[in-house]
Image (cartoon, rainbow, N blue to C red; front, top):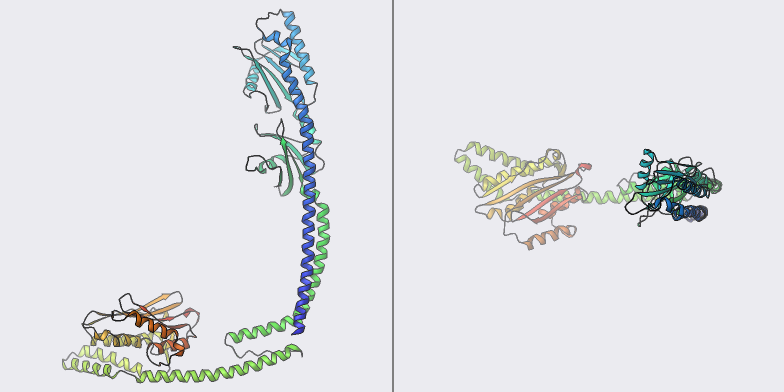
Length: 573
């Protein structure tokens, strides 16, 4: 046994080493992953900051020029109705404004067009043209007017900044600055540092997105999965799966055109860690293989013999004392097996001795019970039979004699000490019929039918009729009228309960409690007849899977119940 303990400790120590190594590897792997992720997020945050600081300044600058345009003196000449301009002056003023628009458009390459609408004068100015407004120009102007003031909107193709002025009582004049989507995409391409990275700008108010040209159109799938916090703002750091690929996503701050969102494929930045993990995993597999070999070897020389010994003990636990075990090789287990076999033989011998003594004692108790036939019951039965014959009531006399014959045939039988439950119930029914004739007009007996599936269950003889006799002897035979006795059968899954109850109100709670106590301590009770005897015989016959209980009856008297459990599991002799 010392060698077995030592081998067990060796296995535990080896397992602890492997598990510790795995734990350290896992912790390092998770730390590396977290570090690389954090470095990636830091890089994306720096890029987002650069974008917001650089390009936001550029957009703010051109929008500032857009606002300054309304302070132009030439514009005041055109929009002020009190100032009268001839055609030459008007032409020079329009050309001057066109030059200013061209100057603003040339300030930044992200400005695609600068458009100025003068509906009062019916002119449309761009950085390259001055002409009269067409009906489509009026429609486009109305569309821009619907966007509102001092904001950036998406017109379906490009982002545009709309700024308008108004003279009191007159139609407004409008300056629209259109930003080049292509230039915005080129600027976004600068931030794509890898083949598996991408970014886009999302304007939440317009629900529009501009994606870098190298982003392989993944932005829309990622946008749909972006999560918001409890304040309604997008979470800055997120992990998203798109088309089976995991991405690290960083949502930058809100700019003029919208949120700046960057993402990169997680596997592209985790390749080194994954390769390192594979090498370490191979090392662990080698260690596991070695441990399996060690465990298999240990199992062959220790655990397998130990398992055989445990199986043998299980057989003993279930009552099988014929399970001998042998060892092919000499050693510790050979001596243990020999000791077990010797112990089992002695145990079987002792159990056989105890069983024979107990069986003989139970048979003696049954013979004594059979011998205690109540002479008063016998005499009264024959007197009743005699009176029926004397009255020439031959038919009822025949039935009574038949019940009486069946009763004494069952009582005096010297065959087997166990019978089918259907025979035991038939005997009790005959006894009940005899008593109902004896106490006709004074007693009502309700005897239910035994469920057919329990007919062939083997039980000890004389377990039911003595309960009926006990009910008569302790009160029912003293009833001058309205006596009631009920025998019921209750089937609960594989369990059966037989209940005998009466309406003898003289039965006190103290009497019931006393009987309960005697049943609970029946092992210490020397009574060999009555309810205690039935309880002890049932417990011995069914290995404590059956017995007798008592309780207050719903009819007012006492209810004595026989319970037999697990009938469906083969408890039949």
